[in-house]
Length: 173
Image 1 (tube, rainbow, N blue to C red):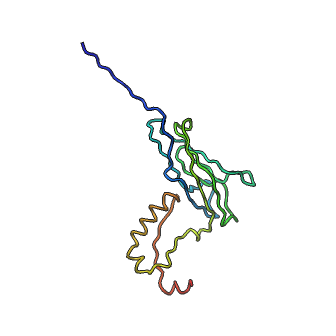
Image 2 (cartoon, helix red, strand yellow):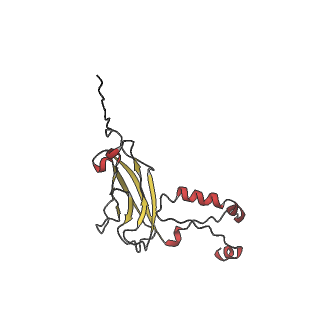
Image 3 (tube, one colour):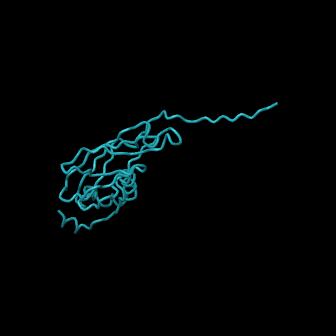
């Protein structure tokens, strides 16, 4: 006689979430609309199934107005603006993001978030001390580097390579 035996090995929740980075840095302009995406946080877990499913939340110090400045989509980790940032140029917000596995019932980890309020023109990266021919030669590498380092931090980021003529440079000096 023979018998078939099926063994179903189930994972247990024995690993905490780990954020893809310790510090997330983002930026908003003074005219950012409410509920605009600011940045995306990501935590992963070595467990499987529901034990690796994340729920995110924010811990934000109270403001003078008593209103949270940012909200987070619970299951995606996308941080969104919750207020208008008018007349707050050069301000910044520092707060924590918490990721909890098992849809918010298991282990938790913390990450830091810093969001600066800037003028839309301040959000440009200008490479001005590098000779133009060198920028042109390395343009693809520079654009790739910006996408790798900055794009994960700023939702909706665009990289635009623009060369200024010597006349434009003299007018700006």
